[in-house]
Length: 161
Image 1 (tube, rainbow, N blue to C red):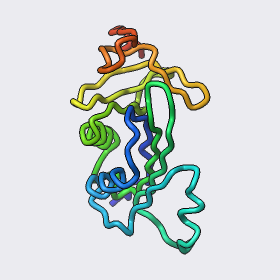
Image 2: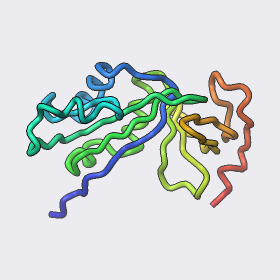
Image 3: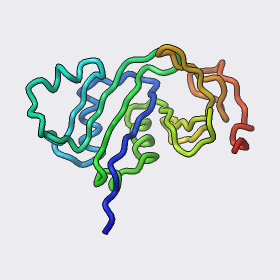
Image 4: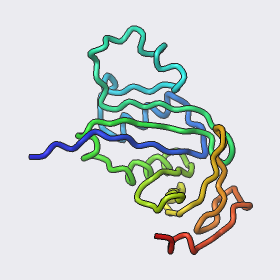
């Protein structure tokens, strides 16, 4: 039997999720024990881990930080291979978006310069993003984005290979 490799699920969310809520979601989503999870602000990881023995391994290791523009939060969740088998990348993003009533941008198999975005209702869009210095702004999407009426709609983004 082949072991699934560890990976990371990263993305941008339109809502800044409180750390305790994020932790509760990850525990439930991956079905792991509290001792198997690390959640912390990206700028304070060393402070959080100061008293944790170096040989401790977390099944899920999540960092987050606040960003600006059309998104409020960047997250990065490193997970063990066994968790990949429980919850795939797309399913994780769909659960995150629905649970926190937010839209989530992530990378999947899109052509360069395009991203996938999942809305809270599960709808999937392809989008173009402009990023500069922690500010993330949607330039175009394949359908209207709730709460962002100025984002240009371009259904042709689906045709780009």
